[in-house]
Image (cartoon, rainbow, N blue to C red):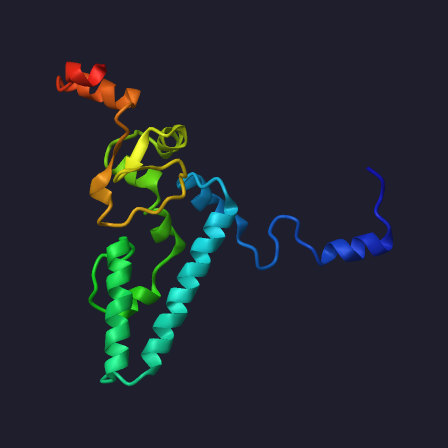
Length: 181
């Protein structure tokens, strides 16, 4: 490699090639890897949602505590976040301020499938979802970014024609000969 000229050295003094200013790529990469998020835009949208919820919670905090509008909106926000599965309790508005993008990532369909022991790893769950072997309620879901709410968590099952479902039923001695036709 050739020697750098004076102005090139001067420019490189100001730039760190290991970590970009204002960009925490390492933390984001860990989260993308942990939850097997394929599109970075999904994670960006999750952080935007968290920012909007935090902003809304802060605006609600500026209202007087006895204001009926504040009480109604706080209850609505906390119920919505609880029903989505992002919050564990609906006790205080402080919990709504502290939600993270990871809490939204934990509600993705492949992660819920791993938690329900339908797959061993998120990567395997993603392949099952993309192949169309999983349904949520009556609808077959092929998007791994599908967010599962608390109410829909009980309705995550295998598609009727799924080979995985047939193998699981065969293992548990619950395979019906009529279903094989």
